[in-house]
Image (cartoon, rainbow, N blue to C red; front, side, top):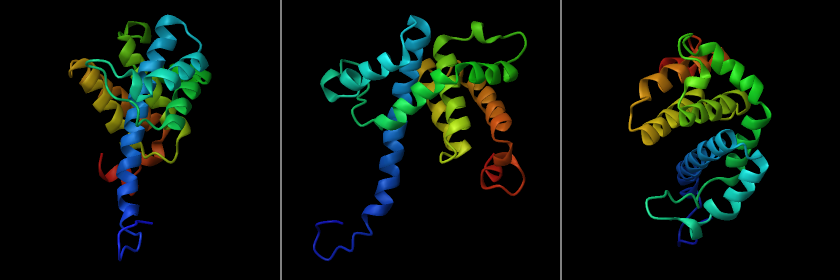
Length: 180
């Protein structure tokens, strides 16, 4: 409920969805960074989640040129990092299945690999997040991380992953199918 005189409280409802989406966008950014650390430094996923929660997801640790992740949805962040780590073999098999045969997973830029893993986890485990939202969010992250260099590659492979994991979302007559 709003404290504004004459308010019914209904005004707050539409604002909640964009705010939640922004918090989830920040969570995805943090999750890609965390998954990068897990893979490249061999650090335990829970330890990375704990470190992010203690430092990087607080506004106290925002350094020069670093994004402010203090508004990140901490639960969504942890779900992506821990879920992608627990289901790593399944996720990597799905990624391998969509990659071009001349470009195996080990040849991917580590950030691109983290993006694909995080997105694949959301496609597998988060039915509440539309496929198109997952695709849009992670393509935007690829654009931010690589300056667009890997954008077409990421977009094509994310689309192939989404169609493999959630084929129903791309069937004629489905709401997502109309936009893609």
